[in-house]
Image (cartoon, rainbow, N blue to C red):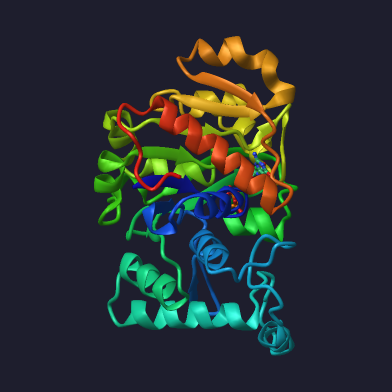
Length: 318
Ligand code: GDP
C-alpha cells in the first residue's frame, strides 16, 4: 500500500496523478477533517469530498472543489429564504452532505460513511478520515477567533492571523485503519497541502505523528510553497503565524521528524543545504501541476524516489 496524507485542492492534484500511475486500489489516502463544518444542518467534509470527487472523475478542474457542471439552485433559494449561505455548495454536492448527515444521525462513523460514499461513486482507493472524533481548526486573527472556513472562504484569508489551533485534537483518536496503514505502508507521500491547516490537523491527532516516525516506509513530501509564497491559498501566511519560515525550508521543518525526501521547486535549489541539515534529502524539480500530464509526471517522480529509497520492491508500481 502507498499511503498518502492530504488536504483538498493541492493534495488532490497529486492524488489524481498517483491514481493514474499505479493501481488506485493500492492507495490509502488519509484526509484532513479539521476543515469540516456544519452548514444548513448538514455535515460537510470538504477535503474528503474533494479527494473522493477527484478519484471518481467528478471534480471541477477549474474551481478545485465541488462537482464539475454542478448547479447552485438550492444555494440560491437558501439565500432567498434568508439563510446566510456564503459557503458554496452545488446541488449534486448537497446530495453528498445530505447522505452523510443522514448516516451520521443513524449512528454511522465518518470512516464507514466515507468508505460507503467512495464505493458508491466507484472510487477504488481507500479514503480514511484522520479521525472519527471532531477536531476543528480554529484561526486566531487580530479581530478574534474564527473557524477555518470563515477565514478561508468567508473572509478570503484577508485577516491577519496570529495563531492556529486544533480544538479537540488532544482527546481525539486516529480513525480505524490509520495507524495500521502508516505502519504497514510501503511508502508514505505527504502531498503539497497546507502544512498548517491541512497536514497540521492530521499530525495533531495523538498517535499519528509517532507512527510516522516509527514506520520504516520511505516518506516523500512535495512542497506547496515556491519562493516565499504558496502556489495558491494562505499557507505562507499561516506558516509565519505558526512560527515557521514561509518557504520550502519551513515546510521541511514542519515534517523534520519523519520526512526522508522533499521535492521543492527548481527555483528553490539554493535551499538544499539548509534542508539537508534537517536530515531531509532535497530534489529540486518542477513541482507545479498545471494539468493532468504534470500531475502524472510529478507522481511518477515521487513514486520513483520512494522506490529508490525503499528497502524492498514496491508492489503496485509499474
Ligand atoms: P485545501 O484543503 O483546499 O487547503 O487544500 P490543500 O491544503 O491540499 O492544498 C492547498 C495547497 O496546495 C496550497 O498551499 C498550494 O500552495 C498547494 N498547491 C496548489 N497547487 C499546487 C501545485 O500545482 N503544485 C504544488 N507543489 N502545490 C500546489
